[in-house]
Figure (spheres, helix red, strand yellow):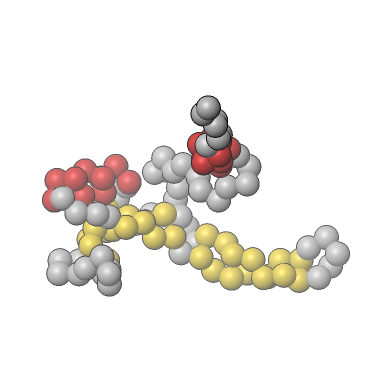
Length: 103
């Protein structure tokens, strides 16, 4: 007699992909607070150093693919005070948007 044990990992994975309880979001490269970098020549994955900055996620993907290396995304945050509904101040994080460079 065979016992049929449900595999909960598939169910959990399907719930977390589209669920509201997940922190992971799909990014399409249009987030102005994200910056994309190739690794600095000679750096290692264990101790990464940022090298050349790419203009977009697509450009970073292409360059990383061409050179057979990874690329890094960077988000810069700042701490800012915010008053909640009860009048108590709390410290929240706000993404710092990079100003476009003028050519």
